[in-house]
Structure formats: structure tokens, C-alpha cells
Image 1 (cartoon, rainbow, N blue to C red):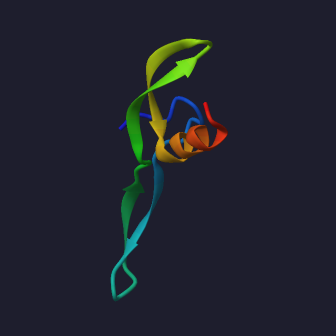
Image 2: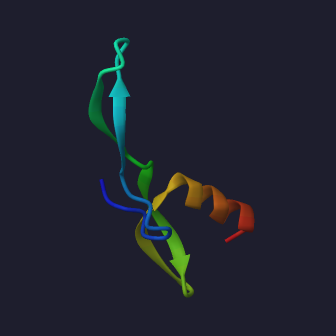
Length: 61
């Protein structure tokens, strides 16, 4: 999925670990959703992560 257009959060990489501690690569995808938010007084559709959504609702924007 796309990056967050507000904080540029993108996929992170790590490993799955089995019981024998064998490492296989995996990706951690950010929870990015398409939301309609006000930017400079105009509403536009943006892909933003849920952390940014929560921050916007707390700030009252």
C-alpha cells in the first residue's frame, strides 16, 4: 500500500521467527486509509495513517 502523505510512514521490514528461531523476511505495513481532510481550507483525499487520523481528531482539525 502507499505511504502516509502526512508523516511519510511506509512499510517496515523484519523477520518472522519460527519455534526453531529460523528467520524468514516479512513486511510490517502501516494502517494507511484514504481520508478526506482539510488542507489550506480545501478538502482533499489523502492516504494517511491511523496515527495521523487520531492526532487530527485530538487537535480538533
